[in-house]
Image 1 (cartoon, rainbow over the protein chains, first blue to last red):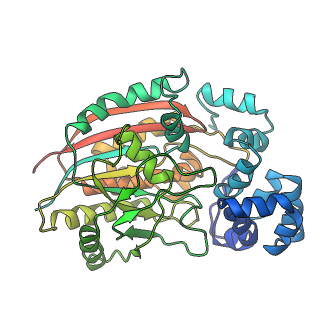
Image 2: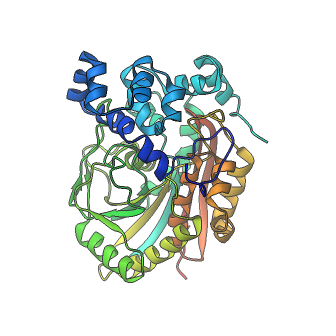
Image 3: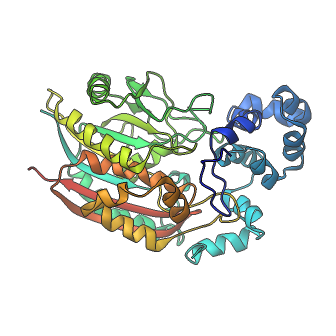
Length: 118
Length: 282
């Protein structure tokens, strides 16, 4: 993040610097909206990561499906979500991962009115 | 002369569209939300516009971070429904209003809003879900033509809330300056409070949302004075989408009537809000 971007605890504020850092990762995830690209990715994930020029850390995070790490390495949630969908995962699943809850616990927290932060 | 006949603000959560597409609107999870829409839908069905200007944001579908236009507008004769990676929504393609778009582009640039112009654009759930909130059963075609107006809300710095309200004022002027006899609706979409990622994922701030639903009618300047940081802190990193409601509000005149409002938690990870205003003649 650049110095003037607001810092909000527990929140990724995706700014131009993050977008630059996460460029390869977000390009890869965004490409998965295309069925042909999904097939190529699934056939050889590591080669697909290399073709998109991911950093070693980003590549590792994608291959391990380390969703928190992807977000820390410049991922934008709208792009990273396309990889989650390829895996059959929902936004509630990701919400659970981001908050240390099961999908069911996270979904229930939303049904109970959402998570409140003072 | 063209006139703005109504303004609709609504969340554009993809699962709201999916619930309609999959026939789940009467499921216990979804029924309260769709019951809440019903009075507004009935009123809008009796007040069909010729054109809807839909203010929304793309979600990694037509735009890809290689370029991030702050404000953009479509000038195409039609807009395909995007395949977001799980198949296109089974809804009609969106018909454009290219001559009207051209007029808006010129008027808004003359008013110092230097919009990016798209003559090809796939429209994603950010635009099609609000159309479905308006018209749940369009059949082969939507009831009106559409002009997409895109706002960058996903990469900081987003346009300020004040700038969005000012754009709305200019949009209203531009619409009223169109020489053709058109009835126009304006949609402001996105929100309400939600945050998808980070330790605060699942954030809902009902107090903020209720304040926003009230102030959007009588005190939009108060909402326009909030900073980006305040939107992100209070409404969440994705809740900042609410600035798009201010563009709709600005396009309406000073005399409006609240036709209907509904608020429901949750729609997936989001607080879903809707408010419909009739624009009264001054």
